[in-house]
Structure formats: C-alpha cells, structure tokens
Image (cartoon, rainbow, N blue to C red; front, side, top):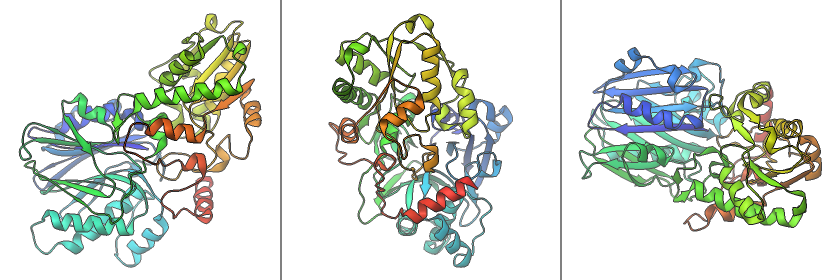
Amino acid sequence: MCGIVGIVSTQPVNQQVYDALLLLQHRGQDSTGIATANGQTIHMAKEKGQVREAYRTRDMRSLLGNVGLGHVRYATKGDAKNEQEAQPFYVNAPYGIVLVHNGNLTNTRELTAELFNVDRRHLNTSSDTELLVNVLANELQAQVTGADLDPDQVFNAITRVHERVEGSYAAIALIAGHGLLAFRDPYGIRPLVLGRRGTGMVGADWVVASESLVLESAGYEVVRDVAPGEAIYISPSGEMTSRQCAPNPRLIPCSFEYVYLARPDSVMNGISVYEARLRLGDRLAETIMTYAPLGDIDVVMPIPDSSRPAAMQVAQKLGVPYREGFYKNRYVGRTFIMPGQEQRKRSVKQKLNALGSEFRGKNILIVDDSIVRGTTSKEIVLMAREAGANKVTFTSAAPPVRYPHVYGINMPTRHELVAHGRKIPEIATELGADHLIFQEVDDMEAAIIEGSEVTQLEMSCFTGDYVTGNVTPEYLRWVEDNQLS
C-alpha cells in the first residue's frame, strides 16, 4: 500500500504536492518522492523516511514547474531499506517519463523476461514500479510516429499496458513537455480519485490522488473516481481527456482500504470510509450478541484510531459504556506497516499506553479493526491484563486474515498470519484473550458496500479467492520463498 498524487496547476506545484503527501502519510512511511516538470525538464527529489523529514528548502526550490506528482511508500515489493527502490521511477525515452504506483504486479517474472529479451530494456531494481514504467515507456514508444504526442496514442499505449500487466495498479505518470497521465487496473483494486479546482475543462487545476481527503483539503471539487481500466490524460494547459482502455472492466475494490488503510474522512468508489466503519460496528455487535455473554462485558474500548467508529457502534448496540482506555503516541507510525516483526513488537508499547482506572477489575471488550500478524493484538491483551482487567474479550471488525494478500498490502506469507491454519479458540489462546470474536465475511462485505454501486469487494486475504484469476498456488509459494530468502 502506498499513497500517490498528481497535480496539473496554474501555479507552481511543488508545495501543493508536498501538502498532499502529508495528508497521505498514513499510507506509507518507508520513503517519499516528488517529481515536477518545467517544460521538457524533469526535477526529482526522493528520500527514505517520512515527508516532513525528507525534504529541505533546497529540494523544494529545485522542484520547478506547474505539473508534478508524489509518492509515499511502504514496501510490498523490493527492499524497503534501499533508496533506489523509492519512487518515483524515471525512464528517459520516449520524451522522459516519471511514474508512481500503488499496488502490486503479479506477473513480474514474465514481465522481467519480456523486457530483457524482447523489449531490450534494462532494470536496475527489484521494484515492480520500475517494471511498470518500462512497460508503459515501451508501449508508448511503439505508438509514437513523430515529435507530437496526442491522447489517442497515449490511450492506445495504456490498452497495451492492460494487456501485458497483471495484478493491481493505480498509477500516475508525468510525461515531460506533454502533461500528466493517470490509469487504474481493470478491477479497480487500488483507489484513485479525480478532482478539479476552477471553472471550465481547460485552464482549471486538476488533481488525481489515492484518497478524496487530498482534494477536499486543497479546495478541489471531487469530480469522480477514475474508473477501472480507464486512463486520464491532462495537458500542461489543463485540458483533460479520458478513455476506457480495458475491454471488460469490473469494479472490485480492496476491502482492506475500508477496514484499516484509508483515513475515515475519505470517500472512495462512492463509499464513505467512516460510514462503512460504523456499519461494520453494527454488524459486529450482532455477532457479539450471538457468541458472547453480555454479562461478561462492562465496557467497550477501541484500539485507536481506525477502530473507533466500529467500537462506538458496538457499545451503542450492546448498551454497554464506551470508554477510551488506550492512549496513542502520535509520533510513532502505524505498526501494521512497519517493515519488521521485531520493530512492530517494540513499537506497540511506544505507541499505546493503558489508563489503569479504566481497566481495573473490569471485564473489557476490545474492538480492533483487524488482526493480521497478531503482534499488536497480543501486546494489547497483555497491557490490558497488566492494567488490572478482570477478563479480556477481543473482537475484530474484520474476519480472520488467513491468506496472503498479493495486491499491494504487506501480507505476502502465510507463516506471518496468526489466523492461518488456526481455529478461533486457538487464535484466542495465542493472543491470551478470554474470548475472541471476528466479523463474518458476508457481514463485512455487506456493511462496506451498503448504499453504493459497488457489488463486490476484493477479499482474498479473508477468503483465499483472488479476483484477477491468475494467482496460483505455485505463484504464492514463489512469493513466500522470495519473502523468506
């Protein structure tokens, strides 16, 4: 999972991209990068770490131009510690293309061989984003017949990209001297939202970003989501054109965006993240009433921050007091997206502190958004007991994560997942909880898509069903072997 943004503006774009990346920081903390174009010249700055730490005044001054893009990353492919893996990625022909990408490609082995043996293109990293920008460059080169570049050529190239590339990808590319290109995979797994500021289709400011909060914060009107398989091309003067470039697109967005990843004040694919989490709480409360003796629950507590809406609804439905017993250090990153298990474990107690007066002698029902590796959950249960809790019932607003996620979330191996191969009582024992209750898969899907035009979610980490249809057991073994090596 990463955060991406692209802007075409009537004003210098460097500060605008920087401000957008600050709002997307929750989507990745490993590295960040910004690229801008001033005529034919591309300027780029990228660094490991978070946005506020990465850029200096000299970097911002060098990022000239009114067209730009940016990226925040947490590694799902490639080496998180290698600066060369940081996005954006650049190729110099045709024209000069720089690209950022959110997602994971699932046919990297085949693409790597094709690029080397057929396209004669060199790759310098293990990043699938470098693969993607080279595939785009190769297909664009095949369309170019002269110095000019027209939208039809761009869209024809994206059609070929869809034919060659498999997996999940929301991508934004800057083409030197020609403008900004944004496109989304034919399933719309990863989000991408289009916004406009100003009047008219020409001369307006345009933005594409992973989440709608970027648009709203900067005064953009949310125009719509980029459709699955669609490409959007915006000239430096602000002229926007679009085309559907995939033959059979289907909108099947990632369920984990709504469970955990996205900020609650975003709307993606017509679904409010906050309202989806409220509905997840309503559904979870019904399951809790079925499986847990309510006399054993004195208070309901969230794990801040993403589980708060669900926890509030659980408390209301159960008629049990809602309490804030865990307090968060805002200066520690999200433990789920930290790159190593030891770092995650060490960060839990740095991140959270338990208020003893809310725990002492009470039967506590803890609501979390999800349980992935179990590292955080286990530490939280221990903290509750050390703070004096009598009994601890742990609940998850998402179902058990039993399968690897290969579409851009860092869950690539089964051995990491606490629910893989375990029944729920066994997971409860592993976490140290007295009771453990998960959301049902059907309830999660129904809660998220209620009232929207979305009819299906990508839920492979819960069900083992991979919507792109090309994820085989052999591929999953290969991913796991490479992750462990």
